[in-house]
Image (cartoon, rainbow, N blue to C red; front, side, top):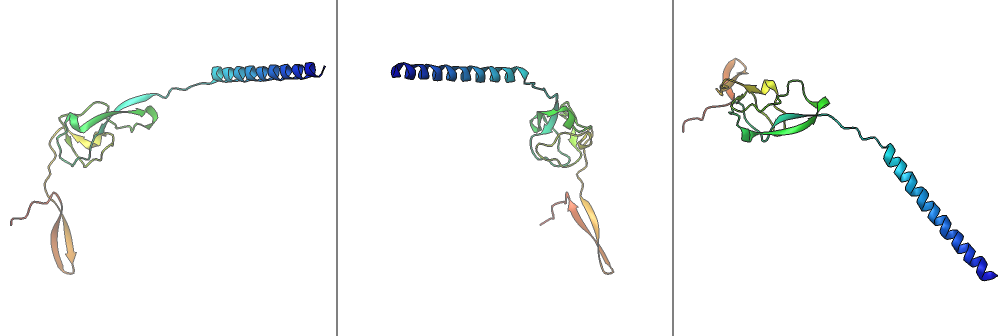
Length: 135
């Protein structure tokens, strides 16, 4: 009689374990069916592949196309590659190409000077695109 009771107890525990596994599988299946995956719309945007100086003639090697989320694209971002145009300003690697960054005409890289005043004395100092000084 004792062996029968122990056998019934083990069969009952086995059935309870099986029922728990079936319930867990059913809960997992229901959760998977109710999971909603929202796709985020993206836009292809041209970005600079490396740091480039003002006045540089843009080639295809200077650019790379990156997928941006549509809501994060700057309004003036260029979506087609502006190969054959010049840079109107210095740019950084990974920066999206903006309309203000490119020019269809060559950009002058002439020296830029500022006026320096020391008391009554006034002089000029080159701050960008300075010519090489003769040796």
